[in-house]
Length: 202
Image 1 (tube, rainbow, N blue to C red):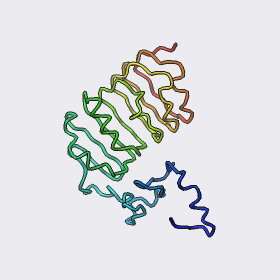
Image 2: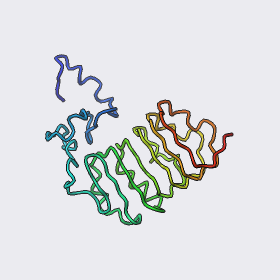
Image 3: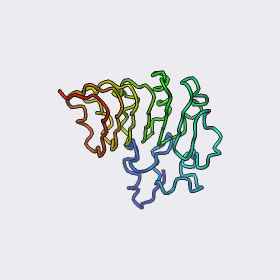
Image 4: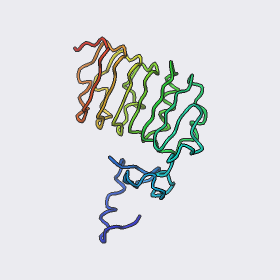
């Protein structure tokens, strides 16, 4: 802990911090780093994770994935090709993009479990059937794209855990029913796309 203010008020209630809206939360730490200090050649985080993936040559990017800065994009031909994902447990990705035709649901959820700090999830073309899932609906998500999947309905209070969400794309699914109060908790939502579904409202 380091005081920047004479009275130490900059360190007050730090133990209560759980996220860093608009900033980067260091791995296993309460330290928040301004985005302007990311990839500046100086380790602001104890583990140096604010300097991870600042070049495409960072050595631990998994097979069938592309890693750059805080984005990981994976497009393996099948769900058995997530080689090296377990090496990424400490990497605090902010954006996760994955597209695997007919991915096994358990495999997908396990994959997402490695990226608890992700702010952007793009999960197109994964044959996802349920979006009301704790692994997908996480409180720090700002952008969620689950278009081109197999979602058939939206449950009541489906998105209650992601109240920070700004953009939600659910187009080109198989949604035939939207339960009452589905979107109640999305008070900050700016863009919602549910086009190309056969929806009905109770």
